[in-house]
Image (cartoon, rainbow, N blue to C red; front, top):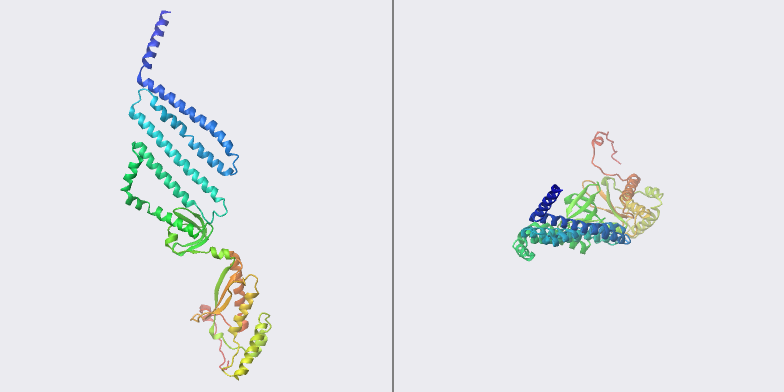
Length: 419
């Protein structure tokens, strides 16, 4: 019994000795503070956050509800930081410098957490805006990115001020001396911001527009418009990234007007050998009357020419008017295009001759297909020129093309002198 009483006295003495030690008191207090912070974090996430998530499930926008829940979950980390910040001063024997450091660190952590949460909130707002029908015409992604940049810049200033235990105004006054340096660092951001405002206000580019910028080998659809860059998916499925401000400083072609008009222009020429252009004989005109598209034209034109020649007493003289194969073919091409249902008759429709050159006489077709689909447009254009090239010999006309090796090696055909 005596040994037991001595041992109990020793244990009590040792316990009293260790409890009276400052480091032991500080350690126990820190453990208790950590336990309270953990309990506060558990309550915030396990109870408050779950209740809030149940409320968010009743929102009409279910997709963004999960994103909002993630933002709230991040904000819940502020609770243990607040507990530590306010409770660290109650820890006994804690050095004053350590208390200031812990409080500053907790404040910096809370500022950074709020900044990240605000950035996530801007992302949610942008996602909600994208659901509006006019969002593609006026994207706000550039403004959202600018807002995030300002939030992180402000949070960085506040974090530095808190860690240095200085006023943020003092840091801002110091930044004034670095304005020139900041202008150089954020030059692209400033230019992109101005470009984004001009692009949005003037409705220059939208997501989905087909644009061309030959200086950057860009030819495709716009898939994303951000603060600093515009992404274009070219027709070969490559992605080209162009700085936003280059859309203001450089010229580009936007095909949106063509898409909205519902028709796409054709402007292509066939090159005619000028040596094949001649007057038509009466029997040739009679033979061309078999073309239904030319009957009205030939009847009207022949009557008009006969009346003119009779009035001028020109007859068959050199100065008399006569139909040519090139003019008759041009009338046929115009009638052929007007008869096609895939050519828009409400838009400009021309069949004209361009200036002759060493490559022949260009006969240009200027018309609009009634579709903007690339494949259909190319099919319509190919069908038209297939027909014109095949029927051209019926008018005594020849296509012009530069002679190839097979043309030079072919046997020559002697033309009689009287032909």
